[in-house]
Length: 430
Length: 70
Image (cartoon, rainbow over all chains, first blue to last red; front, side, top):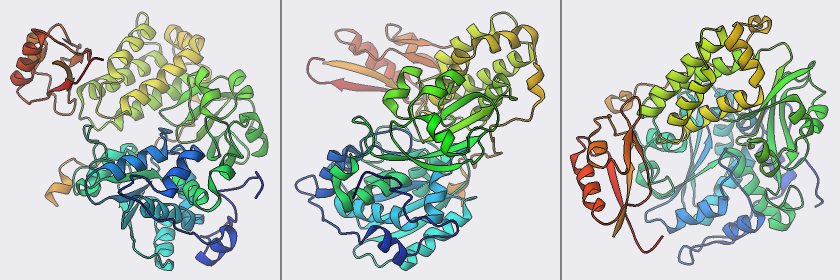
């Protein structure tokens, strides 16, 4: 097989899920190589390591290392496919579930086989009903031996996709992050060692199981081999989910998507915990972590949101900061107080009521907020906000001095759904 | 034996006792929550760290024993 795209999106049909038969025609049958619990490795784990597969959920952590840590942990392991996709602009997991559920399930079954697990849970969130239906249909179609697959849906909330919150909820607890260690790999769902992988990671694993590491590395960069799904959203003619080679240019992707919808003001890379790039940066940048890091960005969950020329980046940043504060689990003091304070400061700055040197106060509160929670939520919120301040200092200074600009009246562009975490005690009382 | 001080931020309720007992490693932010310097402590400060852990009303201060030289 040559180094061509699409890989993950091969065989995709515009409407409906690829049936098991059509899936096997596209990719060939899945062959399981078995596990070696005593040796603490398995052929698929070694292959994933040689392939250099990194997780596509946001953390870009080595999938092989994660699998090894689950194998090394005591207890009966299980596999959890994280398709909660709580990034509001992201659509890749929904597309995978709705159109290509068997590729994701193949990866999960292969992972279960490799770590010696007999159970797979596929998690998605409540408002992705079509995705849940497609996964359920696919589970019924399959005849996997030695593994039971089930579907779980969780409430819509930004933190519902956070892996310790997800494990807590699926264990009958609150949908809230928990203190680590222990990480899910040691003690996850029902205190069992739990391999939590993003749905897209499972799809890549399914392809590595078939074609091997050498094939996988024919695309991508040395640091980030393979391909990735990108959700291109916002001011673009044909928004949607695209599969690209790691290291290919953002400008090319925008061209493939029909070009931008008018001039661009900025791009948010990664997701709502990501980083803002200026038009100059986004016209020349390549999409892989090594290329993005000098700009303070990473791919995270593969969201690229293009902000149109008629939007106000200060207004959008203030709204996003408010939304991220609203999505805090409100468990950790610095996150609870810090994100609320930052949202307030930004709202005031955007209106010109921020008083003296609001940027300095924002940076000080940001430094008190990041890296002090049980999870990375405050870190991500702070990162997005500071990257906007760094990329567009004169716009923030203008607002701090003169208040709302002419673009402030334009409709908000970043989607900010009215999600709320369910009450922490609800599940216990039920 | 050196120990590293950590705080479980979910459990922490900003009582502030830890900063009284171990000011060498713990200060409080403007909301009263501990800012922890996670460099290991050794010598007589180890006893202070243990006292900080013991005096926390919600047992949010955790000590991790460090093995070997760092």
